[in-house]
Length: 144
Image 1 (cartoon, helix red, strand yellow):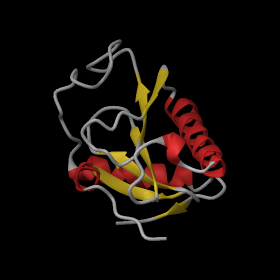
Image 2: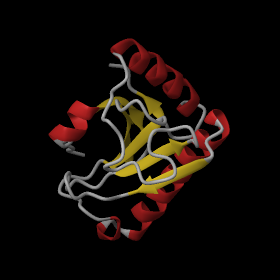
Image 3: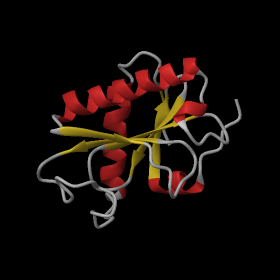
């Protein structure tokens, strides 16, 4: 299956691996953890454009990520969203939210300062998440 990641997603994230349908990314923004699922289907813009079987697979993958963020990071709330206004390629955000984060209780979009993790902190968190995600059936880690 041919798949090209949007340049903005490529520059703003670190690749963690793949689920059967989606590429799994970690946002570099110093918030969360913030995991993004991108179905590996070119020219895809909306969830309802996927075949029903793939829609169900995306929900399974999304639920697995949300559960990991809730359980492993004790997130107070998991924000899940597919906006796509700036990046038209379908991608599903999963953000662990905490009452002490910069945007709480509002939405993160437009309410953060855009600070990114240092390369060392990003690499350490990516390694930790790859290890945790590897416990989920169907996940394959990809190291940079």
